[in-house]
Length: 234
Figure 1 (cartoon, one colour):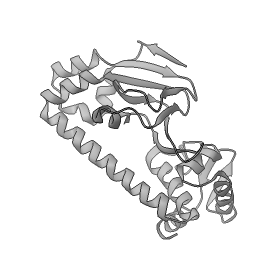
Figure 2 (cartoon, one colour):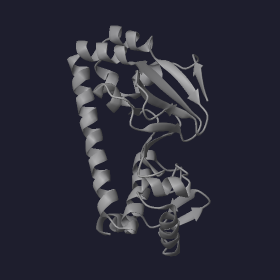
Figure 3 (cartoon, helix red, strand yellow):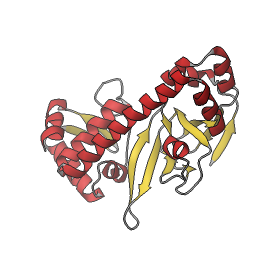
Figure 4 (cartoon, helix red, strand yellow):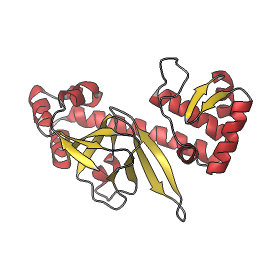
């Protein structure tokens, strides 16, 4: 379920995303006047596979899961979007329909910018266009690296890399070692490109070996260096 909201400040979007730093004052005002905020409950669908994109989307608060259907009924989490990150842009810029589905991993607030607004800004501001190219290039590099890891590494290496990926990209609690993201075993398996049973078994091995401490969905890293070695060599 989604609800459109007007009590959020569009300046938050501009001030927290480096992409917009090259905008002129006039362009900033134009962008601010065209930002829409939408709240979603946990597990709500933000967009579906096959839909036509009409807006550039970003996360103001909460986390968003991007899923892609695989063979049969299996789907895989290809990305998790955190606050101040954009998503859904590939299909929009390519002029194609979405090939993924986006879900609210928890209650979240999404900001949406109409496609024509982004197109106008990019066509009139060369610096902004360059920043988008740079942003997309970095994003593509991350995606390529993850793809290699999840198809060529053994199970322990995949899960170790996923735990480190979550730590480095989504953060930890104040203790610096407990992951902020509390994923279900199914989601952890999907993000690691393995079956749920393999993820449960491998996570249990990590716990027995003293690499992590697992409490429900919470994962606390106990031996960071060993996890790094497993992620690199196994």
